[in-house]
Image 1 (cartoon, rainbow, N blue to C red):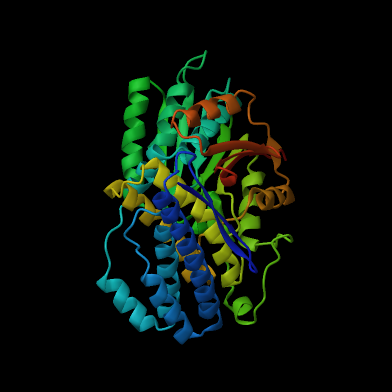
Image 2: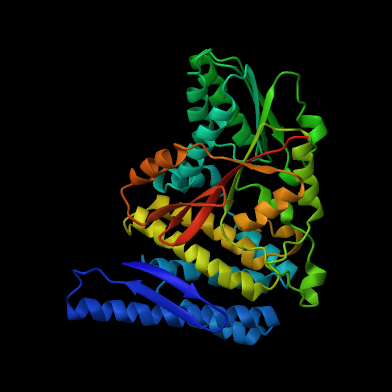
Amino acid sequence: MSSQLSLSKSNVSLSLSLSPTTNSNGAICDVLKSENNGIRLIKLLLTCASHVSSGDLHQADVCLRQISQFNSASNDSMHRLATWFASALAVRLVKRWPGVYKALNCSSLMKFDLDRARSIFTKALPYLGFAYAVINRTLVQAMLGERVVHVVDLGSSDQQLWVPFMRILATSPDGPPHLRVTCVSSNKTALDKLGACLKKEAEQLDMPFQFNPVTVHLRDLNFNSIVKVRSGEALAFISVLNLHVLLAEDDRIDAQFGLNKDSKNINHCKHADEFLAKLCSLSPKLVMLVEQESNHNLQKLVDRFVEGLRYYSAMFDSINVAFKGDLCEERLLVEEMIGKEIENIVACDGLEREERHEKFANWMVRLGRVKFRPVRLWGDTMDDAIRFVESYGEDGYKISSQRGSLMIGWHDRPIYSVSGWTCFN
């Protein structure tokens, strides 16, 4: 059973697609019961979000108690998603008392293996693999004939992106170029692991190679100290789900007075604009950008809560299908990774809220402001991407092309956008 969630402020509906083979009265009753429970659950979540936003702790607590009565241990993707959204609302409430929040947070502190979760996510679902395939093909085509290639990774640090790229680059007609890779990440362990992997791969490919790890948060990156463009080298940047953290601003004053960003009017964000302008000033041959195709950078809690429910209901549905409904350790780890995104979107504000996803249309405006221009994603990239996604054997994934970007989604809901950019000064 596949669920598609449609939400608006004034209307909540849950549409369920029934298999043609579902002809038992008992099975139909079960589906209708699940549908009714789903609608009730969504309404409770939205009501709870409204109470949390207005500061009505008592009514929010009543809603959370009612939500907790649903069976969150089942493999129903809607119920499992609701558990994470309810938890995020509870965290937002508890954070009103910093001492209580810190005490609870310390007592329940467990090390979360983000690298393993992301690796499982990439292998089990085609979203990031699709993005990597588009990046590799476009980047290799852009660097044909170059003898020195410098690629700066702005935070993904994923060997599942880099190893295929190096192997394709090594097959260049004139032999492998000299490759410089600069990786930016606040996770030193991940950088060390990636560096060792890529150096070993370069040795096997007999490729001249240099790895430059930069242990810093993207928001604190100093271009002058790490990106030194040498004469004769072709420069490229890759950002996979990274740049949206630059949109974080201290918006507590706006939130206090009820101000709201108009998503149709893409506001200037000084830090992000300066970062993109600096990127452009380096005249990169290519910038590849991958971002979540959703707008979670809304000021009002209820607005981004609704948008989050729309987006992550599709994500959780695809996770359920990918793991065939099995509540295995790998699935739970992937759900926790996504759940941490949800918590940041719902429970955090100001600089603490980093998951400020914006749609491709917004990024197109931001990049255009600093004189970036879109790069055509090479003609056969779409065919390669479709074949890659089809190899996962599921019918729910959908690839589309929109205004120069490629998007991968679940049914009619786009999940990630991939685009290429260049800037000539």
